[in-house]
Image (cartoon, rainbow, N blue to C red):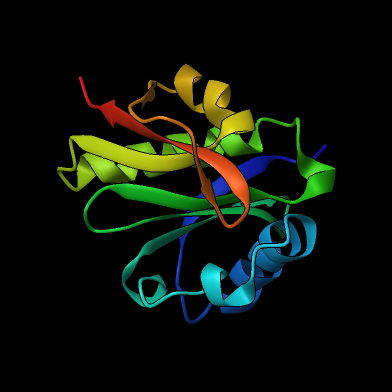
Length: 141
């Protein structure tokens, strides 16, 4: 296994990798409609890419208000702690920007993963894009 690295991505320069990953995970695997996946917040978000060697295998985004979303790791790279590396990079950047509270809507099956990173469930379960979710919040120490 190659080294895993995470860096801030450029929405325009890294667009092909960001789209490839999100389309594979959300649109192809999870059947999220494309019109729900792509939104007007992408150009203003801080995007992150995770790499194994030089190949982009995961992504996430941070909105200016501290909302984290579009966390995705390609199927063949799951279980390699790439999601954790991505989330740690996003949290670090959010804190660097003075965002003491980070929020996300987690797919219910992933809530335990986010709990290990300090997020707490703050809502009842709801359906988004046909998938059960919960709202979660993390407050910086």
